[in-house]
Length: 262
Image (cartoon, rainbow, N blue to C red; front, side, top):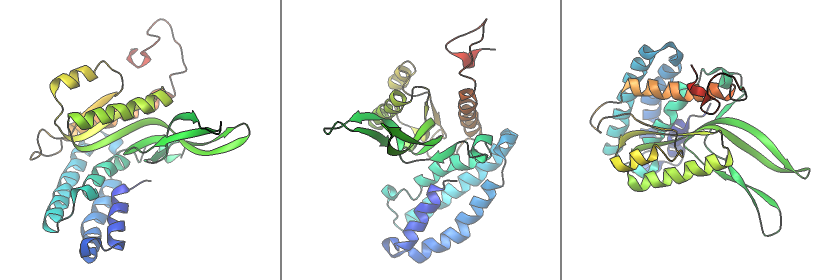
């Protein structure tokens, strides 16, 4: 399982980030580890009540992260707080049957983004990083020569504390890269607050680069909404399950958007 926030905190402890290594170590033991255990103990497949319980824990911990950052001058670019937003998905999907059986895995680096021929006429695999990905790791061979391991994405999620118009364009481009390389991959955005204009959001509903965007808070001062996490969980779970059904062609009914068949 990939716990990116935990790794972020541990790295800061080891490097004595800004001279507050001991404070970070105390925060890790007193605040983070209990939260990790509490979230690991929740079975999010049990419905909305589990998300209400989880959102209370998440909101409380995010508040503590903000307070610690403010008190100790932790740079926002260090991802001390935002990495926990990325880690939330690991808790939500930890009990997915395909992840538990290791048919699929959770990744954030080396995601397959296509191939190209270089100046020496060799085939090179293109890879990119995303904030959260559920996919399948495999080794690629071309002309009996291994070109290394790649992660074929099923779902790829960009996680943001907020999203504005400029960042939105970058996310659209990244999502398009992933979909061009793996046409049946689904791409999503999970954000705390939204600053993208209405016109751009409406236009995005028709470009097919992003499957869905989820906004967790009404505004920064408001708590994360459990129902949005629940909706996000259902969307990602459905995307994984539909992968195993998409080779079927059933009539009568829809042949293209098969997930809409009743």
